[in-house]
Length: 175
Image 1 (cartoon, helix red, strand yellow):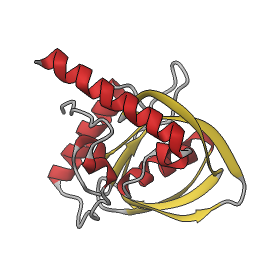
Image 2 (cartoon, rainbow, N blue to C red):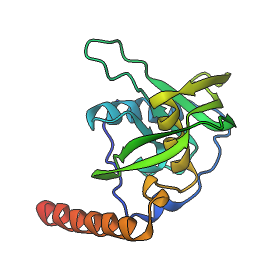
Image 3 (cartoon, rainbow, N blue to C red):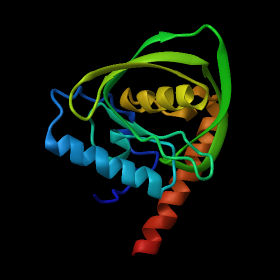
């Protein structure tokens, strides 16, 4: 397993819709393992393949945050929301591709999602609370949508300018 670099917004790859996974291969399983390691290292609770520069429909997540609790890593190939509750939840969201920026985003409180697991088996589960927010946030990435796209234009532009500055600073540090 290896830690992969995470793309920082603005990057055109973060705004592209991803292709479905045709079948779960050893290469895709390796990518999923790398993504989990990258997510835990960041640290974060979710990561989508386009965030590491791979335009395929794959997300990983683990919303267990309690100290001492066992991790519950999930790998979802071709995740698709099948049902959303009418009830909404608001969470302060952040993103590994938009470091140190947070904003409240309103989303359905519960969702039912279908996906393929690491063995290519079809799965379905109902998510609520932080898990529901996370899975929706990560699926948005697969459609080229970022959490800042839910914000008012001025706030979105402010965050984008901060990210451009951050990318310039990081480039200078590497030079």
